[in-house]
Length: 168
Image (tube, rainbow, N blue to C red; front, side):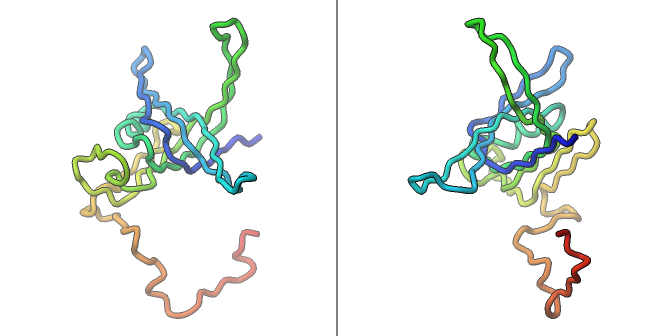
């Protein structure tokens, strides 16, 4: 059985950060993900997908993402239900994120929380038992890669690919 989801979209509002009674951070946000097709009027529609992320990645999401931020989410779909105030059963579906990728500079679009600091890399936070956290925030770091650098610029001619190398 496989339950994996990968999404890229924009936050519809600032993330909501809370803490459980035992002090574990949890952030909730909604991601607007464009559909690949247009409706009858030629307009693109979007799906609004509720996402939850836990622990340190939740705090980072709350600190670095805001309404309109472009983010990539990898995780699993989780369903649930509860009894609403009117006594009727309410069903929920959300993505529990294992990884949230920050896909644009912190100071682009909307309000700027970074105090003018440039942010050139992408952030990746894995939530699998808190294993790996990496941050490429500073151009001074050794592993910093400029987004506009062409990794194939130094090539001398066409790239040879055999049929065996193709994944399909």
